[in-house]
Length: 83
Length: 155
Image (cartoon, rainbow over the protein chains, first blue to last red):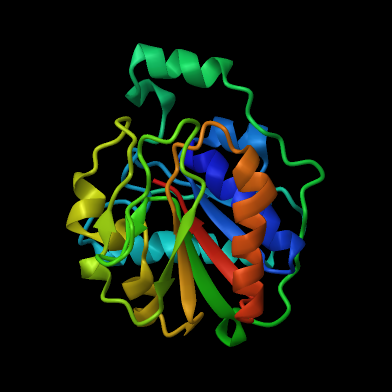
């Protein structure tokens, strides 16, 4: 449900000229709802940026998400992989 | 892995039958300037609120579509989490709100931050009011703040 909510909010932001990227935990829901830009992450629900008190991992996820902002071929999606 | 197999059978059946809203056409706001020169806002659906704000209404049928404004100078560690969903482990975001509201990370990255960020509570099964009222209102609030880009994080 959270994945749908962020997607719907993102669409509204884009309509007002704000470029968005969503972190998404459930790829299959994003493919149905279609947020403009999304980074699919391989984490459990409740842990969208990986792990609590792990700034390095959180930052890597954020950087991967922000890289998608330049995409104009919406819907534009990428996947985060743990190296 | 973010996967439906994490959920109970009842939740999986609900998700399978649920009429997901389809965004069509998909709107696109191209970047207006480089990221380093852009003003960035955070939007979370983790149900965070400040200690002096009213928590989200966990009893509301179809979900609470309201949002809380989180000022940019907030001490992230003071945020309280009021998300009603029982489908995820709340321990992570309670131990470290940056897990779903990574303001400290954006600060460390030296990005230009918006004066206000937003917190919603997911679990909105009836998103009609979100689509018609609170999401447009929230978008206007960020537009009024001159926000260029937004990072949205569910839970």
